[in-house]
Amino acid sequence: MSSKVIITCAITGSIHTPSMSPFLPVTAEEIADSAVMAAEAGAAILHLHARDPQTGKPDQRPEAFLPVVQSVRQRTDAVLNLTSGGAPTMTIAERIQPAMVLKPELASLNMGSINFALFPMLARFTEFKHDWERPYLEGSRDLIFRNTFADIEYALAQCGGNGTRFEFECYDIGHLYNLAHFADRGLVKPPFFVQSVFGLLGGIGAHAEDLHHMKRTADRLFGDDYRWSVLGAGRNQMRVATLAAAQGGNVRVGLEDSLWSGPGRLAQSNAEQVTTIRAILEGLGLSIATPEEARALLDLKGGNLVDF
Image 1 (cartoon, rainbow, N blue to C red):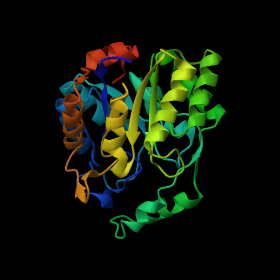
Image 2: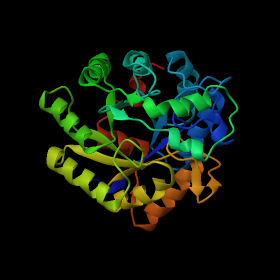
Image 3: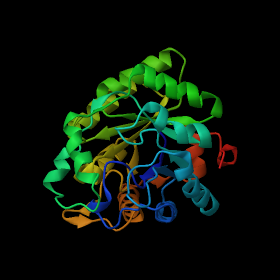
Image 4: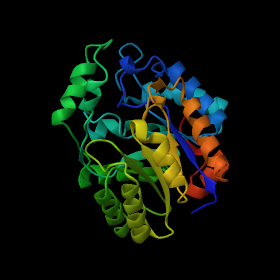
């Protein structure tokens, strides 16, 4: 593991809806501004989703991403990581479009199908701005986030010639073995950027033993051929990041993963969460990777070779 810690910030995703926080960026301008502030706070990688500016729904059309990525690229040298997760209700063909068309340095790629349970949020949030929000959350009781071997192979094939590398999102131990399968077949090349996701109902938990188990398994499967990063969902965010960083891992924070800055306190920006985790990391005696250092650690093609 490197002595430099890569901070990824996930700016806005599909898990949270606009009603849940007034600080969640929705329009292209809001998303871009929030991303730039996160980069200025210390995030080397910006993980981006797009939304419909009127309804706040996740929007996976490349044209929805274009004003965001163009604005951010003009204002920061951070690595831009475009989601291929989109929303669990989308097909893989829809989800992969931004990475196919815009050819970013990084794109996320979910490494297995899971029960993607968002409905527990209904216990906390009871009033919604838009008609789609409550059914979207309630519908996750019967939702499988599909990421079959055929889906994953499709995504790899579609982006393989673009020079785009992947943030392999692993929600459970079996997802590491799925990645190892594709590595054994020569369809992915090291270094593998493994993003372990903890604390989402349907995936692995967020206990310290879950982190240890995930890291031990990745160490055994990939040795020195991977870069480990973690994210903790909701209230698990900072604790999980701290535990992993102490073991040599990289970290991801952001309003996609958690709306909170502490018990009962909504984070007012993505930059606030980046600032918090940066202070923790530096308090542990760790150094924060710059975007160029992150590019070198992950063997990325460079920001001048994207299509935006």
